[in-house]
Every structure is written in C-alpha cells, then in structure tokens.
Length: 208
Image (cartoon, rainbow, N blue to C red; front, side):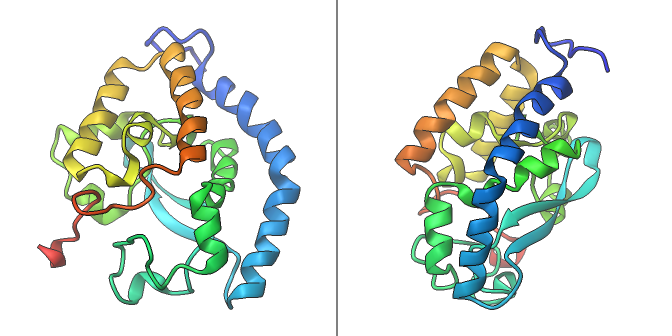
C-alpha cells in the first residue's frame, strides 16, 4: 500500500497497525475484566455491535463495550443519549467517562475497518442524510479519535461536527494526527463533550 498523498511519512495502514496491534494486546486483560463487570451488572452481551459506515460507504460492525441496558436504542429516547440517561448502567457511566467502552475499536483498526485517527463512524441513517459535500468524510477510514472529537465531541452541533471532519480530510498529515492523539489524552482525562447537551448531536428525522 502506498503512502498517503497528504505528506504523512508512513503509510496510514502501517501506522495504524503499529499502534493498534500492541495496544490491543496490552489492553486485552483490561477489556476482559471490564466485560465481566458489564455482565455482572446487567443481563446481555458485554460487547455491543452496531452497523456503522466506513470508507467509501462500506458498512461494518463496530465493537464497543456495552454501556446501556440491552435494547436501549429501542427504549425511551432511542439513539439520543444525554447525561444522566437512566438507560446507562453504573458500570457504563464509568466506561463512558474514561472512553473505555471504545477500547474494542482497536480490533476494528486491526481488521482494517477503522484507523486510529479519522472521523468517527456514523450509522447508515445518518449517512443517508449527508449532502454530496458531507459525503467527503467517507473518503478516509473512520477513526477512534479525530479532529471533531478533540474540538467538542458529542456536544457539537451536527453540521459543525461534520465540517470539522471535512477539514481534517482535506488537511490531514502525520503531524496533525500526532497533535490529535496528544489532545485526545487531555480530552479523555477531562471528560469533555461526552454528551450532546442542549445543542449537540444528531437529531433523528422523527424528532424534527
């Protein structure tokens, strides 16, 4: 695979594997322990799978640790999640606070469905509503963290979040990726932007 034309010194895939493979091995015991805690608190699988849309519009199954009661997307507010949502379990709230629920995303990186850095993958119904310009965020593999993530995350208005992702796609470099990774550490420790709040997030068609 050739190096990206954006000036990154290593092919994007090679860099992803350089990070994701050892990180998957190192965090394996932690993920196993967290799976036990999830199962002890509530019934249902410890791992949550959901169809997301990847590079060039290809669907894939994302892996996460379950943070809500089983079937939460069909209960109450559906896909909308706010702080204090009673569908979030106690263990789930802890996992979300420190982004530990996203550790299994590393498996998606190893499988080639995601990158370490890139726009967060969205669900099919969201992609169906993209404008032609917004579909530009599908030109790259989705990431575990990204430019929109460190600049507001879920608290961002949906159009602004997409614009930040498009800016990243157009300007991505190895230096920018390293900057995003460093900022991600501070973001996780600070717990910023975990929930949509008053103006953030995507609004389902049925809610408009």
